[in-house]
Image (cartoon, rainbow, N blue to C red; front, side):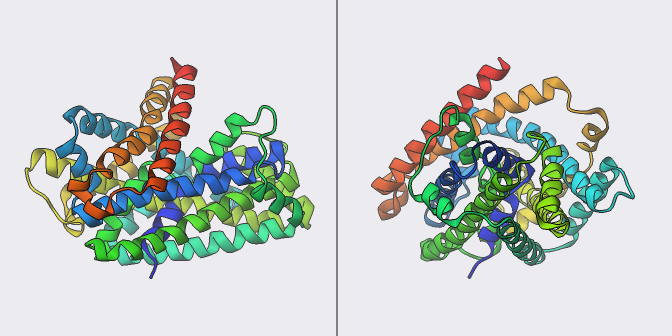
Length: 398
């Protein structure tokens, strides 16, 4: 019954999301656990909107942007995609390298990062969709078991956890942490890959809406649990380092102290599974977006998703993800690239929420499957939250 949603969940839980959740847990204990649940719900509604458009109207969201919106928006997204891919690919290499080096310090962080990048590219180029799905199911099971086990090992206060989830509070000064958790849970651009993965699964037409909703519901339930578990672990261990990838090592060391050593290695393996599965998902899912754009914009034709995966543009983009960003591992992140990424990226989630409010509310396009009142409320809330994050990001860099 499940498949594409599993890939979304495994791809969406990356190093940045884990660190954002861990910082919030370390700073505020159990007080912000509810934010992980809210984040999972918002991302579910956004992803369901992407899926519903494709299953009912019959085109990818990329094609809808190009046909029904001003051409500026599709070009803006295309430029953003190129920059986003470069930065995120380098970040994933660094996170994979860090986690592998912590477990097996025979190679440097950069060397491990390069090995993981090339291995992910080989898996994507050599394998079919079903191989990727099976790999991601393995990783999601590994991540789920390890994160929940880690949370149990520190012997958390169950009543306090339930109280935080069902009686939300906003401690003084916690707003940016709350929004960070909500924004970080469940990925961003990778939400768009779901439409291509359901096509690979042969889910086509409105009859698959229920199937897709169950698939996404299960995926974001797991995503919410990941966020909760990491926050609980951080709240129970109080790591010494409170930012960046090194926080993960500090968290693992504290797990070792609390559990007598076993917890450290369990946590590190779980972190490795989270970041490597995220890399595989990005290497597999993001090239669809590039290939779809090029095919629609320049080739004047529409290819099915399985055909897109066999196109030269898809393969070129896998190579673009796997090789050029390696340079950032050795030279750090140039300031201008970081600023361009932050400023361009800040617009994506509000843009996605806004376009789903526009496209999916048109009866002439989706008929009886247009947005419900509740869906519109949640999308509007998403728009407000992500617009606030966008403004905050712009103020930091402009």
